[in-house]
Length: 604
Ligand code: F6R
Image 1 (cartoon, rainbow, N blue to C red):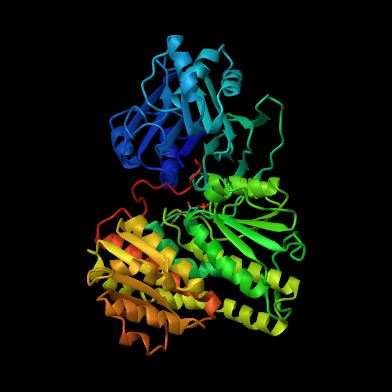
Image 2: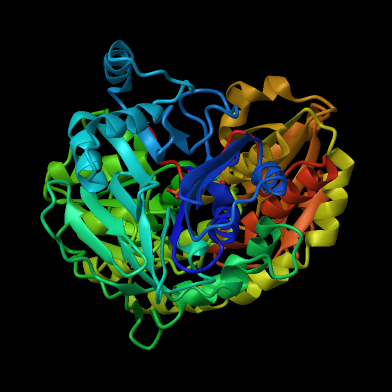
């Protein structure tokens, strides 16, 4: 959360920074600010509101210069106001600081600084860093930053500039920072999309790294100033992949990308002839007698689907946990535990801490991750990349589908190695997996019908989503998507649980989405639909093509293509993503930047 861009080179810094911040706005969008060196001074402009407010205000300022830094904020300490926006500076104004993360001891630091005569203009924890660095500065900015960081602790991606030095001094612990390498210019950013128009050669900083970025080059050290070697990575993501490509919203573009994403996730990994998958993992799947999966939000629902897949195909006991709960529940873990974490960004702090907890306790660790080079990938024993490409829409769609495909492959990998999945069943299952891109393509054709349903119910106050077995997580994911971008209250329940309480909510105003695709539990779900209908609820059923039963009881039936029942979540989630999207559009919501959210949650 929070987006940072820094530039030193020969272009107009304000243009590079605004363009980069635009690509990072998914990380936070409640205020934005920029500092550019103009005629020897760092000029700061910062505004509450979305980046456009800053961009409009910049038209009234001459910020022409080739060295600067900028920020788009997701508020933690202090409301989204002009003074709380970054960059922060001091009365002298010669130093600017941009910070992503939380300085945990900022209160005692602030008290000390006030007692020593410093005046604060914001309520943020970040401003203490500007004052602390000013206090330590004796002509050497790098040294001042190092001394300040020796006193401040917490999570940070820190970017500091001083008007007398054309260098950007950066440091990171927990919050991500990446350096982009150019010719006669260099860049700093929170995430790769900001750099793609200019370079694909990047250095991902590690926890405890500092770096000095100038026009001529980049020097990486540890916090004590000892040089450290960091690999220069060439990123494969194209610029087009990180742009809207003619769609009105990133979310819609990403929904439509899903067939291609699945091809990438599965590409070269399914081997029907050998009745197995080739995942290139070092871990030995036969070594473990239980699996723990941790994740947050949408990725947690992928974990839940993964549990059903692993238990069905690999016959291994699986526990799943919301990462923020796992790390504090003192889980029972030993060296026979395989701990899997799932994350699109690879930066979610709760997920990172949960996997660290499992590792500390002796588990083998595996990340199912989208973002290459991200923090989690550096801490786990092994990574299975989901290859979804850059996901910019704050509401996750294509990464979810790719996570499901990855979990299905892991289940085959473990099942074959453990001998619980026979060759014939594996071959058939892999054959079904291979069809998924085409089936998702077909599911996308449901958009006009789903748009019609969205219009019909867009004024509903509440929605209920029900699903059974491996479709229970699909119900939860459908409800989460709707909540996130339309702000309609939506609850999800395992279908069989409805009669234990939520049934009291049902009346003729409540749309109830029921996942009723073909499965061994289909009849039970149809009974649940009848229970809803008997109480006047409005049923929107998601059923398998060719089903003639469900339409007797449901007002609307969305028919999705037939697949193996363990793969049904992959095709069934598509109309639910579209339902959330179309509802949000009817309600005039900001689909790509829903209120209060940020894409990459790097604070606890
Ligand atoms: C929902 C959403 C969030 C994320 C969650 C985990 O649409 O995007 O719930 O799924 O914050 O993020 P990652 O996968 O980056 O760890």
